[in-house]
Image (cartoon, rainbow, N blue to C red; front, top):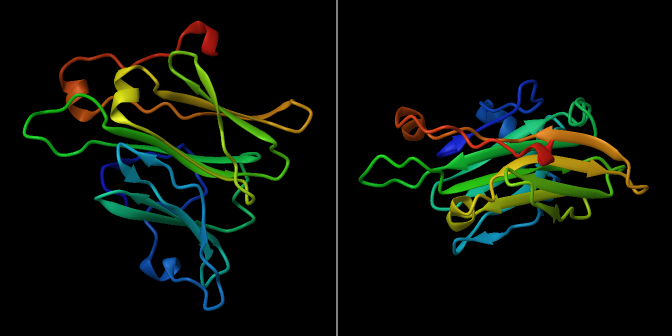
Length: 193
């Protein structure tokens, strides 16, 4: 399970409270290492393997906290289209009520038809996200970037011809203390839509 907050979109095919037996790796399964960025001096690992039921499992390392592992059948992985994306955020403990996230992330997998994946931030800036050989991606935003407004808003997946084949809104709301303080959640500029 995740420490901090793990957020998913409605209709996610992933099991976010799996039975521990579902997490067992199949005897002949090889665990694959995927993009593992270093952010704020910490490495955010991502691994995949096949479980005993034949499902695909992704294990996301939240440094200094926990490993979140979720599994989905291969048939359900792309039921919402050619992009499966799982956003989340965390706050590091402090002796005061923090109103901002310390890290935000989005990881997941793209179908082979996806050639490029772009992230659009709340400020409408964009960046390309790396897809590894299995179509897996792992993007993490650090505290300084969040304060600068580089807050993930949506993903845009395109095919080899440049045609958009999927869009996913991945915006994460305010922290508990941010809501209590009466802050307004950041909203994307009109140009981001």
